[in-house]
Amino acid sequence: MKRALGAISATALAALWSVPAAAAWTLNLREGVTELSREIYGLHMLILWICVFIAVVVFTVMIYSIATFRKSKGAVPATFEHNTKAEIIWTVIPVMILVAMAIPAARTLVKIEDTRGADMTIKATGYQWKWQYDYVDEGVSYFSTLSQASNEARQINSGIDVHAVENYLLDVDNPLVVPVNKKVRMLVTAADVIHNWWVPDFGMKKDAIPGFINELWFKVDAGKAGTYRGQCAEICGRDHGFMPIVVKVLSKPDYAAWLAAQKAAAEPAPADAVPGDAAAVEVPAQAN
Image 1: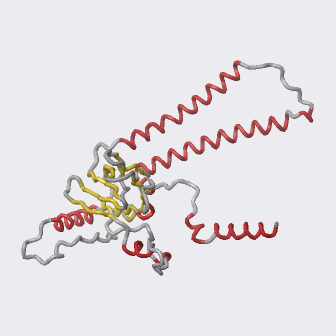
Image 2: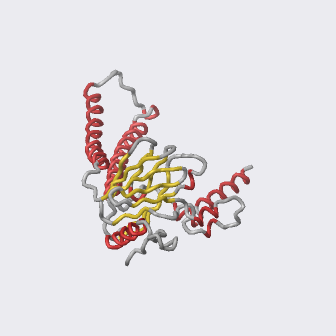
Image 3: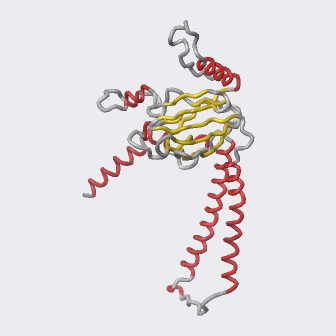
């Protein structure tokens, strides 16, 4: 029996610490690439170290008391029932700590909800199982669904090795495109059931509720242009696991070019134009 348990444990550890698993294993929050994600990370670390300090002090005193004042050393228990001074101290100190923690936490929470001064507004509408993005002030709108490669590989008996599919289940046909270093206001809602728009690197996660509009904002740091991936984080039905979110952050010139191309593609084609001339324009590659 012991030998069998040892074999099972060894197999589990080997699987846990295999190269792919170890590469993805993290113990902390992502610092992210936005102003808010960095502030949330800093608040998290501040509270963590306060908790660590409290735990060290409490356990040090507790272990010292248990070891020093045990019966085998002849310790005699006190006969008093309470101590007013001690009760005041252990009430006032925790209250002061909580107030000190609440001040930066409240400041961050207020900042998270402050969407004023946005440079652009995008409405994200969740459907089973895709997203629709409407650039409110630009007249650009499109759907974003699971990429064809991932969709084919996920089918039962497809015969496709999912490990060979790049960004399996985390890629889409039309990513959300935004400019770097601009405050983007997102209006998040849904057309059928509750979804959730979540991109970990942005530090933002918001429910998409039918008949209700939630707000969030993000501003990707200068120099952090690139592709960032997330997922619907609310169980929304059969294909919930196949509803990724991809955000492509471009430099300002590249974003302007992409937006102009999308507007041109959305214009009605001339009557004598060949069908397909107004096909969707690809997202330009990020300039080095």
